[in-house]
Image (cartoon, rainbow, N blue to C red):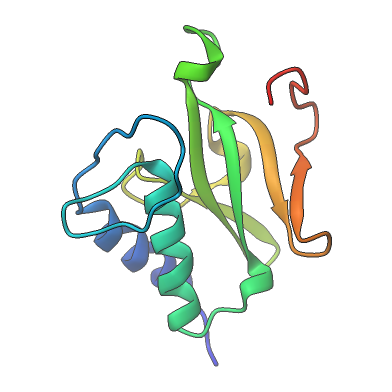
Length: 131
């Protein structure tokens, strides 16, 4: 199977067309035509890439804090999909219209899903006091 950066652009764009709906709490519910929150967007992107044949090991959920210098951390918590492709990690995010390189996204990374551990791992330099 041939994979391309265009696959990431198409999935990110199509899912981002759905409305953002803020949720109270964190229930990881599937996205619907009515929309969803950031984790619903990230899960939908993961599911669509798997349906296109992308290997699950190249797809990881990640949690982070947006705008690191502003406001209370619990109000800035966010979820995205990370995609490893051709030696680069891309971020698929409902806040950006196109995939971004991991190092170019201005987020404070917190937790990243590990396929090897089948669990969340702390991101490098993560604030471990926020659980």
